[in-house]
Amino acid sequence: MLGRRKRLQKKDAELDITSFMNLMIVLVPVLLMMMVFSRITVLELSLPELGEATEQTELDEKDKQLEILVRQTGIEVFYPQGYLVQAIPNVDDAYDYQGLQDILKQIKQTLKNKGLEKNQATLLLEEDIPYQVIVALMDTTRSYDEVVVASVVQAELFPQISLGDAPALLVSENANGNP
Image (cartoon, rainbow, N blue to C red):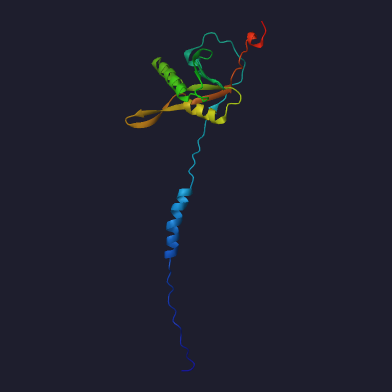
């Protein structure tokens, strides 16, 4: 019996994962709290077509354009182009988006009462208008929140938005000191 060796019997190793589970229980909520959810939105806009400026005498109602002129001092709404609907001065050195939205709602309702469906608006921007202001103006022009049957929905105003340069301010001769 000397030649026989006693065989060591190996026991199956037990897998202790309690410390790993404790780590996961703590780590997963921490990672979820630190996660930043970002929303990416795409703004579609169309640029005015290039062409010769033609003299417009009598426009059809469907050819009339809604123009929103944005200056450093405030916002002016024109419909049809060239005819001022209302000027909205800045309030506390900020643009009055709610005032703009109220005017746009009135214009949209007037057009609906005439049986017209207009979805286009043109933002005419002065130089040095901040990007965030442009985005806020586009959001204000595109839609508004409306309560329908105890829930808030996005009601459409003028979702097709074009951008353009604001016309230069006319300086009168008296302001320059010339008679």
